[in-house]
Image (cartoon, rainbow, N blue to C red):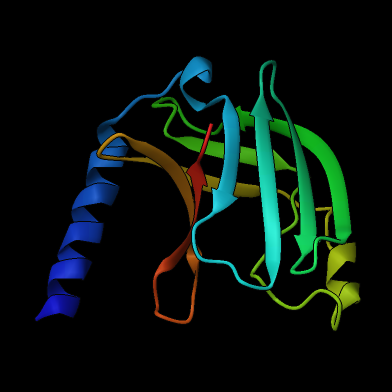
Length: 139
């Protein structure tokens, strides 16, 4: 029953995000993954379509520092296209450093305003509990 309620709540949030429109000023800020344990990932969305990102291992060692561009990917301004982009799935990057080489592609994420919290989610990937991997705006 709880799983059904969570699924319905997630569906409602996704539908609500489809009708929400965002501006550059709304989304500028620092985002972090909600549920990671192997990496500390900070993504800073800046003005003028730029972003910077740093990924550290669990001991605080810098593993990846990158910069790239972003733009709204649809007319409703509720999806962002990052390019280039590293898809961080919270794998142990000390054990699998070759994963860090995959930064050439881009990624489109959906923006969601959940109560007063703004986040974007990678709906194609889930954590251990089957929830989408989401980045929460912290400042």
